[in-house]
Amino acid sequence: MPTYLVIVGGMIMLSLVSGMLGLGVAFAAIPFLGLFMTDLVHQVQPLSLLLNGVTALLAAFGFARSGYVEWKKAIPLAAITFVSAPLGSYIVQFIEQKVVWMIYFAAVFYLAYQLFRPVKTVSSKENYKLAAILAVFISIISGFLGVGPGFLLLPTLILLGFEPKKAAGINAFAVFPPSFSALVPHLSTAHWDFNLTITLLIAGAAFSFLGARLTSVYMPGGRLKQLFAVLILIVTAYKIYTLL
Image (cartoon, rainbow, N blue to C red; front, side, top):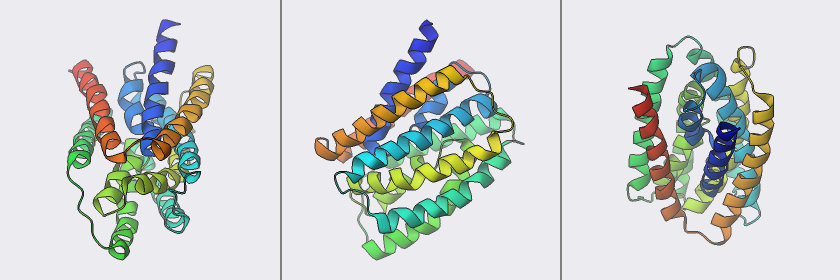
């Protein structure tokens, strides 16, 4: 029971913060759930992808209420990521887990570095076209890592000139479909704890929506993206320690 409560409490915190950024929770959930589950590909990744889709969707609803989801940009990005993500999920079934963890850790530190960098604004027309092209590669990589594309798509949108709150809103909607499509290759081999899964889905949905509303109404986006970078670095550093 104590372990169950720690998992639920930790995922509530991660869902709240990831909802603030419109990321979906998977990128932080991977190292956190990895502390309690031994099988990365068949336990951690499927659960993280499922939670990512639900939390991203509820975060999108939260941002949409304040007008931060630009639907004409979010919908095509969602279609691109939905089609591309399953390829990465299929490939990872044949890769050794240590290799996946190494790639994951490299992606974590890249993300943290990008979130702390100053934002350079370019023209709106150019940045959206480039974002759409990059979304294909981002989705394949994220499907491979089992985290959904939001962890790379969000900093990409910000670096290409999108205002952080609008980037979070677009990102939240764009990443929920590929979270479910990337889950499909895992379904035949996934191992589920159904009581834990249902609890995390309910808690994650509620707190990701709350996080999106907090950002939309009260919080500056710049500080929140740095807060999330610190959070995932702490969790990931501890996971690296446990693997050594």
